[in-house]
Structure formats: C-alpha cells, structure tokens
Image (cartoon, rainbow, N blue to C red; front, side, top):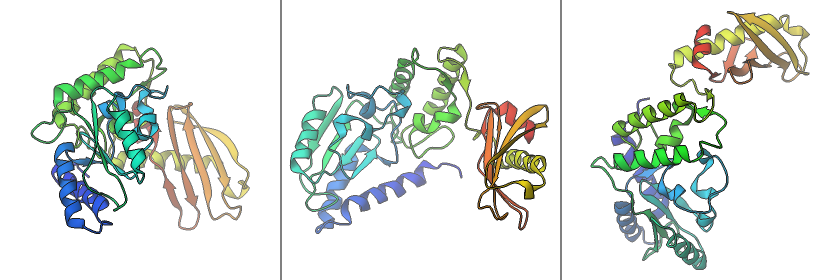
Length: 319
C-alpha cells in the first residue's frame, strides 16, 4: 500500500493522544496538556531514524554498529517508561518522581537536547511526564525535518563507523532505519520525498566507493510482490521435486543439492510432525546470496513461503 503521510499522521497522533489520556481521571485536561506537548514535538511516529539527535547526541552510546541503536538501548534513557516517539523527540511517563527528575537532569547535560517535567499527569494520574526534545530539529512546512539538517546528520552517522564496517548495506536493507517508521519507498513522517531521494543517492554513492566493504544485499522489496512470490514458488517447487519421493523424508532434517538455471541450490527438508501432513523447507544459494523458506502441505498441494531474501540479479533468474 502506498504511504500517505496526510493519512498516517492523523491516525498516529490520535493513537498517541488516546495512549496518554485514556486512563486519566480528568481526560479533558490531559488532552490539552498532550496537545501542547505535541505542538512542540511534531507528529507522533513509530520509530526514529538512526541519525536522529535523540539517538546520536548522548555520549554513552553502546559500541554497536550505528544501525543497531534505539533510544531504549541508551543508558541515559533508562528511566523512561510508557514512551512515545515524535518527530522532534519523545514523551515519556515514569511512575517515580525521582526517576523523572533523574532523567531530566541527565538529558539536560547533553548538548542539543532539552528535557523538562510537564505540569500535569499523562498516561496515569500517578505518572510524571517528561518531554524530551532535540531543539536543533527544525521542521519543514510539511512537518518533516528540515532537509539540509536531515541530510547532514544522515551522512555524519553513516560515515562514522566506516572503518569498522565489514559490509555495505543497501537502501532496501536499511531504509526503515534511515527514514524512520512508518515509511514509504522514499519518505516518512520524518523525511519528505526530496530528502529521502537524496539520502538514497548518497548511500548508493558511498556504497559504490567501497569504503564500507562489499555490498550486502538482503531485502528484495524493490521487486513487486508478484515477482517475489514467483521466485519463492520456483525455488520451493523445484526443491520438492529434488526431494521426491516425500515418503522417504522423515522428521530428521535431510539436506541435498540440485541445479537450477545454472545455480547450485541447497535444500534442507524435514517432515515437521513426522506424519506426512507438513514438510519444512529451506532453500539457499551461497551463504547469503539467495534464501527462501516455508512449508509444504501435501493435502491440497499447498505451499507457503516467506519472502525470499538475497541479491536482486540472482533472484531475478528465478522469476
């Protein structure tokens, strides 16, 4: 389904408002307080992009590849409880006043971030809401982050770990981490289409330079669902033929190989329950080149499989 920000934003904003006010004894006052907070924080979202200052500004980030980060993994946000993310920051409601004060004190020591207690309850009457905003985040007229800032933060975060990288991630593998959630092909509630298109161009140029290492292709979302289904069906059906007769397959996994369109395919198959009603299959080419898995049900000749993952050019050989 096509991503439509003007439809998604009202839905998430309504959900966030309900989340923070439905349990309050004075919901009307809570809704007013939430509205004031949202006016500062922008639209509610389901996840921040990994270059967002809320994630990159805290100094004590874990020593992980930057794509692994989210606010809950950062020690500074440990006091957070009952939290929702927004374009400019987060709104959280610890039950302990001391934890709320600890959070405010810690965040206000970080350059670029501001935290403050709100004057009234949200989520529950006995909670202590804290608003945390990245004050450097400025919004475009459409409510997304200003393009020049988003691009600069994205590039800084991307190249920071270039020396430690072992593979280059493609746009299709990491776009939900680059655009935030929810997102479409090139845009989200945090990044508009103009910014998203330039982020993709920048990432592909950096990948082609070789600075991150060999390109690791995993997601095949660039292919339409019809093609992805055809690839999975082709590999799985051929694997079943190679494993025939199925009455020789037991509940102990059996591995075999077969040739298909010039490629050596490896299949792992077993009788899931040992009664011939369901067979589990996994077909792979190379280590990460192409993979699909699923189940076959002899009754009705029914086949279910996951979306295949791997390299686009290889996958298209099996459409």
